[in-house]
Picture (cartoon, rainbow, N blue to C red):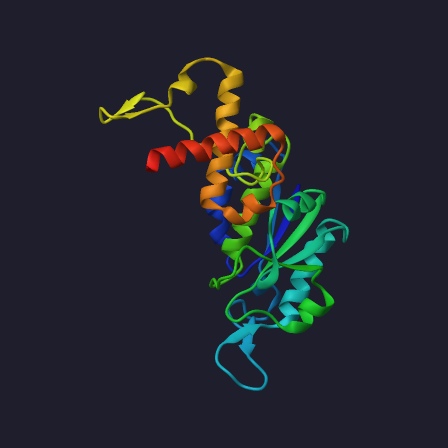
Length: 251
């Protein structure tokens, strides 16, 4: 996957380029990141990228012309074949299905706003879609872009060692949250024990236990997700067992 990034602060992306799963994807040549800084398309590098808003009001926004030149340069790199996304709190909130749709594109460009945003004409005439990672305000689009890149990189075939690592993650686990996980030591602080089922070596029972815990976790922590889930006959039995055990425990 090729991702072009338009940002006033490309240096921020070193955090994901030099470390973690994104670094792994780049080293495997499964992911390419290229950057364009609107400052490079102005007469004075540290001036003329932002301006006061017409009509008055506090704050500044990014000017159109440096952004247009950045967009053209980024699109030229991939023969105008990239979809252009603007990271914005006004955009469509990303979810599992939206991420899967993004993965169908070979080339995408992410435009990171700053300050109070960008000239509306850029959104109207150049942006294909506005996207958001949540209902809150950040100082710019760089952090949301990094979040999005990390999500996408994990799902690029070949980046992770095993496909099942993704399949069992929360949200990608058939719409459920993940089950609890444990590692050494078996007993923590002389009282907290790893569930015996996980030490049994009985793979079918372990799989059933994990499914049951996923159902229970989702019911307890994200009832909104659980309501959307259509349970199979097996899942209904496992969930009812989970609920009954919880009720007995709290009596």
